[in-house]
Image (cartoon, rainbow, N blue to C red; front, side):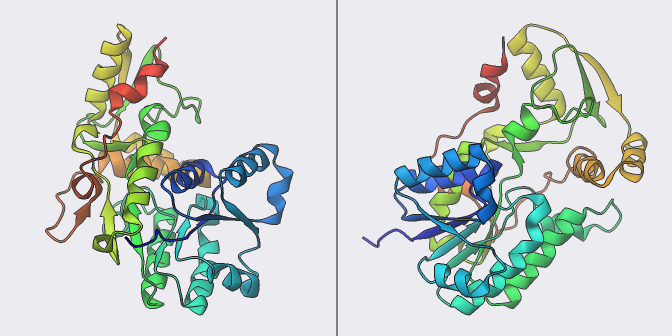
Length: 312
Protein backbone atom coordinates (compact mmCIF):
# COMPACT_ATOMS: atom_id res chain seq x y z
CA UNK A 1 0.00 0.00 0.00
CA UNK A 2 1.34 3.40 -1.02
CA UNK A 3 2.23 5.70 1.91
CA UNK A 4 -0.06 8.68 2.33
CA UNK A 5 1.14 11.96 0.86
CA UNK A 6 2.84 14.49 3.09
CA UNK A 7 0.60 17.55 3.18
CA UNK A 8 1.46 21.21 3.76
CA UNK A 9 -1.49 23.45 4.65
CA UNK A 10 -1.20 27.19 4.13
CA UNK A 11 -3.84 29.17 6.00
CA UNK A 12 -4.57 26.48 8.58
CA UNK A 13 -5.62 28.95 11.27
CA UNK A 14 -8.42 30.41 9.15
CA UNK A 15 -12.08 29.44 9.17
CA UNK A 16 -11.90 26.59 6.63
CA UNK A 17 -8.21 25.90 7.17
CA UNK A 18 -8.87 24.69 10.71
CA UNK A 19 -11.21 21.97 9.46
CA UNK A 20 -8.77 20.93 6.73
CA UNK A 21 -5.83 20.73 9.13
CA UNK A 22 -7.79 18.66 11.63
CA UNK A 23 -9.06 16.30 8.93
CA UNK A 24 -5.57 15.90 7.47
CA UNK A 25 -4.18 14.70 10.79
CA UNK A 26 -7.19 12.48 11.48
CA UNK A 27 -6.87 10.83 8.06
CA UNK A 28 -3.29 9.80 8.77
CA UNK A 29 -1.44 12.13 6.42
CA UNK A 30 1.89 13.46 7.68
CA UNK A 31 0.75 17.06 8.10
CA UNK A 32 2.73 20.29 8.11
CA UNK A 33 1.37 23.77 8.75
CA UNK A 34 2.84 26.97 7.33
CA UNK A 35 2.14 30.13 9.34
CA UNK A 36 3.40 33.69 9.24
CA UNK A 37 5.45 35.01 12.19
CA UNK A 38 2.68 37.39 13.29
CA UNK A 39 0.42 34.45 14.15
CA UNK A 40 1.98 34.62 17.63
CA UNK A 41 -0.04 37.79 18.27
CA UNK A 42 -3.36 35.88 18.17
CA UNK A 43 -4.01 33.74 21.23
CA UNK A 44 -6.77 31.67 19.59
CA UNK A 45 -4.52 30.78 16.66
CA UNK A 46 -1.59 29.96 18.92
CA UNK A 47 -3.74 27.62 21.02
CA UNK A 48 -5.04 25.91 17.89
CA UNK A 49 -1.49 25.41 16.58
CA UNK A 50 -0.41 23.98 19.93
CA UNK A 51 -3.20 21.43 19.60
CA UNK A 52 -2.12 20.54 16.07
CA UNK A 53 1.47 20.07 17.19
CA UNK A 54 0.34 17.80 20.02
CA UNK A 55 -1.61 15.78 17.44
CA UNK A 56 1.54 15.30 15.36
CA UNK A 57 1.67 18.22 12.96
CA UNK A 58 4.90 20.00 12.07
CA UNK A 59 4.67 23.80 12.27
CA UNK A 60 6.76 25.98 9.95
CA UNK A 61 7.02 29.75 10.31
CA UNK A 62 7.74 31.61 7.08
CA UNK A 63 6.53 34.50 4.95
CA UNK A 64 5.36 33.43 1.50
CA UNK A 65 7.61 36.15 0.10
CA UNK A 66 10.71 34.39 1.53
CA UNK A 67 11.35 32.28 -1.56
CA UNK A 68 14.43 30.41 -0.36
CA UNK A 69 12.91 29.31 2.96
CA UNK A 70 9.58 28.49 1.31
CA UNK A 71 11.19 26.29 -1.34
CA UNK A 72 13.11 24.43 1.36
CA UNK A 73 9.86 23.72 3.21
CA UNK A 74 8.05 22.65 0.03
CA UNK A 75 10.77 20.12 -0.77
CA UNK A 76 9.80 18.23 2.39
CA UNK A 77 6.15 17.66 1.38
CA UNK A 78 4.16 16.18 -1.50
CA UNK A 79 0.87 18.09 -1.58
CA UNK A 80 0.07 21.74 -0.86
CA UNK A 81 -3.41 22.84 0.22
CA UNK A 82 -3.92 26.60 0.33
CA UNK A 83 -6.75 27.97 2.47
CA UNK A 84 -5.88 31.65 2.53
CA UNK A 85 -8.71 34.12 3.06
CA UNK A 86 -10.36 36.20 0.37
CA UNK A 87 -8.20 39.24 1.12
CA UNK A 88 -5.00 37.18 0.75
CA UNK A 89 -5.66 35.36 -2.53
CA UNK A 90 -2.93 37.19 -4.46
CA UNK A 91 -0.28 35.91 -2.04
CA UNK A 92 -0.73 32.60 -3.84
CA UNK A 93 1.41 33.90 -6.71
CA UNK A 94 4.44 33.71 -4.40
CA UNK A 95 3.41 30.18 -3.49
CA UNK A 96 2.95 29.20 -7.15
CA UNK A 97 6.44 30.44 -8.05
CA UNK A 98 7.96 28.56 -5.13
CA UNK A 99 6.07 25.34 -5.97
CA UNK A 100 7.37 25.52 -9.53
CA UNK A 101 10.92 26.09 -8.32
CA UNK A 102 10.74 23.26 -5.77
CA UNK A 103 9.73 20.88 -8.56
CA UNK A 104 8.53 18.04 -6.35
CA UNK A 105 4.91 18.88 -5.52
CA UNK A 106 2.51 16.17 -6.74
CA UNK A 107 -0.65 18.23 -6.31
CA UNK A 108 -1.56 21.82 -5.47
CA UNK A 109 -4.97 22.96 -4.23
CA UNK A 110 -5.43 26.72 -4.56
CA UNK A 111 -7.72 28.54 -2.17
CA UNK A 112 -11.15 27.89 -3.71
CA UNK A 113 -13.80 25.91 -1.77
CA UNK A 114 -16.75 27.91 -3.12
CA UNK A 115 -18.42 28.16 -6.52
CA UNK A 116 -16.73 27.50 -9.86
CA UNK A 117 -14.79 30.68 -10.63
CA UNK A 118 -14.55 29.92 -14.35
CA UNK A 119 -18.32 29.57 -14.65
CA UNK A 120 -18.95 32.70 -12.59
CA UNK A 121 -16.65 34.86 -14.71
CA UNK A 122 -17.70 33.44 -18.07
CA UNK A 123 -21.00 35.32 -18.17
CA UNK A 124 -20.13 38.93 -18.95
CA UNK A 125 -23.75 40.09 -18.62
CA UNK A 126 -23.85 39.79 -14.83
CA UNK A 127 -22.03 41.80 -12.12
CA UNK A 128 -18.32 41.06 -11.92
CA UNK A 129 -16.81 39.62 -8.75
CA UNK A 130 -13.21 40.79 -8.17
CA UNK A 131 -12.66 37.80 -5.87
CA UNK A 132 -13.68 35.27 -8.51
CA UNK A 133 -11.73 37.18 -11.14
CA UNK A 134 -8.64 36.74 -8.95
CA UNK A 135 -9.39 33.03 -8.55
CA UNK A 136 -9.60 32.60 -12.33
CA UNK A 137 -6.26 34.37 -12.81
CA UNK A 138 -4.66 32.14 -10.18
CA UNK A 139 -6.01 29.03 -11.92
CA UNK A 140 -4.46 30.17 -15.20
CA UNK A 141 -1.12 30.86 -13.46
CA UNK A 142 -1.11 27.33 -12.01
CA UNK A 143 -1.84 25.81 -15.40
CA UNK A 144 0.75 27.98 -17.16
CA UNK A 145 3.37 26.87 -14.64
CA UNK A 146 2.57 23.22 -15.34
CA UNK A 147 1.81 22.52 -11.68
CA UNK A 148 -0.26 19.38 -10.95
CA UNK A 149 -3.46 20.55 -9.30
CA UNK A 150 -7.06 20.03 -8.27
CA UNK A 151 -9.60 22.86 -8.24
CA UNK A 152 -11.92 21.97 -5.35
CA UNK A 153 -15.40 23.54 -5.37
CA UNK A 154 -17.70 22.93 -2.41
CA UNK A 155 -20.30 25.56 -3.35
CA UNK A 156 -22.03 26.94 -0.20
CA UNK A 157 -20.66 26.20 3.26
CA UNK A 158 -23.41 25.57 5.78
CA UNK A 159 -22.06 27.70 8.60
CA UNK A 160 -21.79 30.73 6.35
CA UNK A 161 -24.88 30.45 4.15
CA UNK A 162 -27.32 27.81 5.41
CA UNK A 163 -27.34 28.81 9.08
CA UNK A 164 -27.41 32.53 8.29
CA UNK A 165 -30.00 32.33 5.48
CA UNK A 166 -27.68 35.00 3.98
CA UNK A 167 -29.65 37.73 5.71
CA UNK A 168 -28.07 41.14 5.17
CA UNK A 169 -30.01 42.97 7.88
CA UNK A 170 -27.36 43.28 10.59
CA UNK A 171 -24.68 41.55 8.47
CA UNK A 172 -22.67 39.64 9.46
CA UNK A 173 -25.01 37.43 11.47
CA UNK A 174 -24.54 33.66 11.35
CA UNK A 175 -27.68 32.45 13.10
CA UNK A 176 -31.06 31.64 11.52
CA UNK A 177 -33.84 34.25 11.45
CA UNK A 178 -36.41 34.10 14.26
CA UNK A 179 -39.22 36.38 13.13
CA UNK A 180 -38.71 37.59 9.55
CA UNK A 181 -36.73 36.57 6.49
CA UNK A 182 -35.75 38.19 3.21
CA UNK A 183 -36.14 35.82 0.24
CA UNK A 184 -34.07 36.59 -2.82
CA UNK A 185 -35.88 36.79 -6.17
CA UNK A 186 -38.62 34.12 -6.19
CA UNK A 187 -36.68 31.75 -3.91
CA UNK A 188 -36.71 28.93 -6.45
CA UNK A 189 -33.04 28.54 -7.47
CA UNK A 190 -31.36 25.43 -6.07
CA UNK A 191 -28.37 25.97 -3.79
CA UNK A 192 -25.82 23.25 -2.93
CA UNK A 193 -24.80 23.12 0.73
CA UNK A 194 -21.97 21.28 2.48
CA UNK A 195 -20.85 21.24 6.11
CA UNK A 196 -17.36 22.38 7.03
CA UNK A 197 -16.42 18.90 8.27
CA UNK A 198 -17.69 17.21 5.12
CA UNK A 199 -15.83 19.69 2.92
CA UNK A 200 -12.60 18.73 4.66
CA UNK A 201 -13.41 15.00 4.47
CA UNK A 202 -14.00 15.05 0.71
CA UNK A 203 -10.94 17.22 0.16
CA UNK A 204 -8.67 14.80 2.02
CA UNK A 205 -10.24 11.83 0.21
CA UNK A 206 -9.17 13.40 -3.08
CA UNK A 207 -5.54 14.06 -2.18
CA UNK A 208 -4.13 10.70 -3.28
CA UNK A 209 -6.86 9.90 -5.81
CA UNK A 210 -5.42 9.98 -9.36
CA UNK A 211 -8.92 10.56 -10.76
CA UNK A 212 -8.80 14.12 -9.39
CA UNK A 213 -5.42 15.10 -10.84
CA UNK A 214 -5.58 18.23 -13.01
CA UNK A 215 -9.36 18.26 -12.64
CA UNK A 216 -12.07 20.46 -11.24
CA UNK A 217 -13.72 18.51 -8.42
CA UNK A 218 -17.28 19.52 -7.53
CA UNK A 219 -19.02 18.73 -4.24
CA UNK A 220 -22.76 18.50 -4.96
CA UNK A 221 -24.50 16.29 -2.37
CA UNK A 222 -27.85 15.43 -4.01
CA UNK A 223 -29.70 15.53 -0.69
CA UNK A 224 -28.34 18.98 0.15
CA UNK A 225 -29.76 20.92 -2.79
CA UNK A 226 -32.37 23.34 -1.46
CA UNK A 227 -34.16 26.34 -2.84
CA UNK A 228 -34.51 29.26 -0.45
CA UNK A 229 -38.23 28.56 -0.23
CA UNK A 230 -37.48 24.97 0.78
CA UNK A 231 -34.92 26.16 3.32
CA UNK A 232 -37.41 28.57 4.91
CA UNK A 233 -40.13 25.89 4.97
CA UNK A 234 -37.71 23.44 6.60
CA UNK A 235 -36.78 25.96 9.30
CA UNK A 236 -40.42 26.82 9.97
CA UNK A 237 -41.21 23.12 10.36
CA UNK A 238 -38.26 22.59 12.70
CA UNK A 239 -39.13 25.58 14.90
CA UNK A 240 -42.91 25.35 14.70
CA UNK A 241 -43.11 29.02 13.77
CA UNK A 242 -43.99 31.08 10.71
CA UNK A 243 -41.59 33.74 9.48
CA UNK A 244 -42.70 37.06 8.09
CA UNK A 245 -41.45 37.04 4.50
CA UNK A 246 -40.45 39.69 2.05
CA UNK A 247 -39.04 39.18 -1.44
CA UNK A 248 -36.15 41.23 -2.79
CA UNK A 249 -36.21 42.12 -6.47
CA UNK A 250 -33.25 41.89 -8.82
CA UNK A 251 -33.28 45.67 -9.20
CA UNK A 252 -32.87 46.13 -5.45
CA UNK A 253 -29.89 43.79 -5.32
CA UNK A 254 -28.24 45.59 -8.24
CA UNK A 255 -28.65 48.88 -6.37
CA UNK A 256 -26.77 47.37 -3.42
CA UNK A 257 -24.02 46.06 -5.70
CA UNK A 258 -23.51 49.49 -7.23
CA UNK A 259 -23.76 51.47 -4.01
CA UNK A 260 -22.06 49.56 -1.19
CA UNK A 261 -18.50 49.50 0.11
CA UNK A 262 -16.09 47.06 -1.54
CA UNK A 263 -16.59 44.24 0.99
CA UNK A 264 -20.38 44.46 1.05
CA UNK A 265 -20.46 44.79 -2.73
CA UNK A 266 -18.65 41.45 -2.98
CA UNK A 267 -21.22 39.83 -0.66
CA UNK A 268 -24.14 41.25 -2.64
CA UNK A 269 -22.51 40.10 -5.89
CA UNK A 270 -22.30 36.59 -4.49
CA UNK A 271 -25.98 36.75 -3.50
CA UNK A 272 -26.79 37.77 -7.06
CA UNK A 273 -24.85 34.87 -8.56
CA UNK A 274 -26.41 32.27 -6.24
CA UNK A 275 -30.02 33.37 -5.90
CA UNK A 276 -30.71 35.43 -9.03
CA UNK A 277 -28.45 33.95 -11.70
CA UNK A 278 -28.67 30.37 -10.41
CA UNK A 279 -24.91 29.81 -10.33
CA UNK A 280 -25.37 26.21 -9.16
CA UNK A 281 -28.22 25.31 -11.50
CA UNK A 282 -26.25 23.47 -14.15
CA UNK A 283 -25.66 19.89 -15.20
CA UNK A 284 -22.17 18.49 -14.91
CA UNK A 285 -20.46 17.60 -18.18
CA UNK A 286 -19.55 13.94 -18.83
CA UNK A 287 -15.90 14.58 -17.98
CA UNK A 288 -16.67 16.54 -14.78
CA UNK A 289 -16.08 14.73 -11.49
CA UNK A 290 -18.20 14.99 -8.34
CA UNK A 291 -17.12 14.09 -4.82
CA UNK A 292 -20.21 12.27 -3.53
CA UNK A 293 -20.09 10.02 -6.60
CA UNK A 294 -16.37 9.31 -6.16
CA UNK A 295 -16.69 8.64 -2.43
CA UNK A 296 -20.17 7.19 -1.78
CA UNK A 297 -18.99 5.77 1.55
CA UNK A 298 -19.03 9.27 3.09
CA UNK A 299 -22.27 9.99 4.96
CA UNK A 300 -22.62 13.71 4.48
CA UNK A 301 -24.46 16.02 6.88
CA UNK A 302 -27.99 17.02 5.86
CA UNK A 303 -29.38 20.55 6.28
CA UNK A 304 -31.81 19.22 8.91
CA UNK A 305 -29.01 17.75 11.01
CA UNK A 306 -26.86 20.87 10.66
CA UNK A 307 -29.66 23.25 11.65
CA UNK A 308 -30.93 21.18 14.60
CA UNK A 309 -28.54 22.71 17.21
CA UNK A 310 -29.84 26.17 16.26
CA UNK A 311 -33.40 25.26 17.33
CA UNK A 312 -34.12 26.44 20.86
